[in-house]
Length: 182
Image (cartoon, rainbow, N blue to C red; front, side):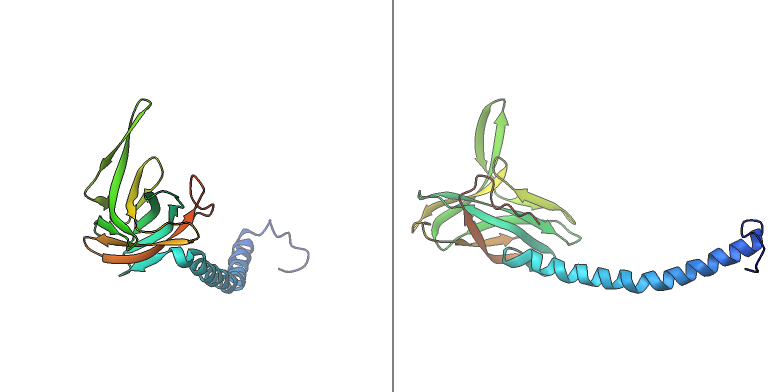
C-alpha cells in the first residue's frame, strides 16, 4: 500500500490486501497442518497397542481385560467398535482355559441386581458397545488352571459377520479394569 494512505480508508485496496494475505497465510499454514495430522495419526496407532485388534476393517476390539480372580470363575470386559455399514452380532466367546463362557447382562430393579444370559450382543453399524462391570459382560466359568501368576487370558470372540477374533485379555485386580481408555 502506498505511503501516506490510510489502510482502512481504501476499501478496494483493503479487500485485495486481505485476499493476498489470506493466500500467503494459507500457504504457510497448510504444510504444517498436514505434517501435524500425519504425526498425530502415527501416534494413534501405537496407542491402540496389543489390546486392540481389527478384522476386515469392520470390527475393532479395545480395552480388553479380565479380573485376576483366584476362583474357578472370572469375568471379562471390552469395547467393541463396528466401523462397517451393517450391524454385526457377538454370538459366542470361548477360552482354552475355561469350560465355557457365557454372555451376561445385568438387570437392576431398584436395589436388586440379577443377571441374565443372552444369546448375542448386537453391535450397530458405525457404533460402539461397551462390555462393563454392572452392565453386559462375559462370564468365564470353570477355569482349568489358576490365573495367579498370569498376566493375560486368551479369548476367542465369534461374530455373525466378522467371524472369529482371537484376543488376549489383560488380567487386573482393579474393580473397573485398566486405567487407560482408548
